[in-house]
Image (tube, rainbow, N blue to C red; front, side):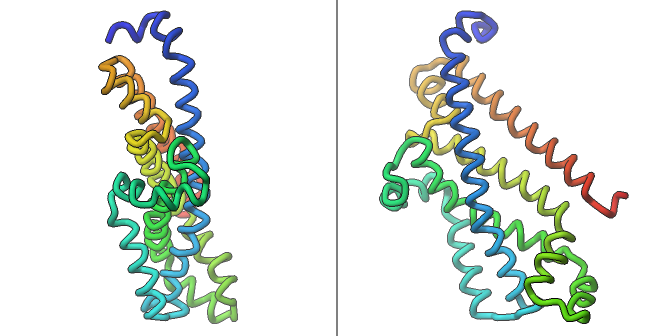
Length: 227
């Protein structure tokens, strides 16, 4: 373990760690953005069509809810393997950074949808009723009431989503997705380079701490209740 404090270790593994760190950032960032583009509308739809929503629609709500529950119930590693052919159809490869993004999105989008649903249901019903009484359209209520009022909760939910996707990228390394998880498996486990396993673990923990800290501070600053 002491070798991680030597120049030789960083000369040998430093460039590789940096490269896979960037791959992890790319996988996490791209997957989060795409997953939110899918999960955010689904979460809004669940709230709108729910029993107490402004556009109740039980069949739609149940179908969307069932799809989301199925997506959330599958362990990521199993999902990744099951949709490999679909992944190749979409991005042209089953492995590497591109090959990891598709299953990351498929797995994270349902999780994000539920996070968004939870955030929006916390919005005061009185505010929604006031907007309706003033003749606001469904789109206006969503865009100008639901989302702005739920911003602090959505931000905190965003940190959880990013951290979850980051954890999934490490798991994806088990099937050749690249990133820090791949390094931990190839060098830390297969080649018994314990120092690499330790360093990758420390980097991943540090990334989680940074994400949580930044998003918590942002959520605190935009929360009107704390002003």
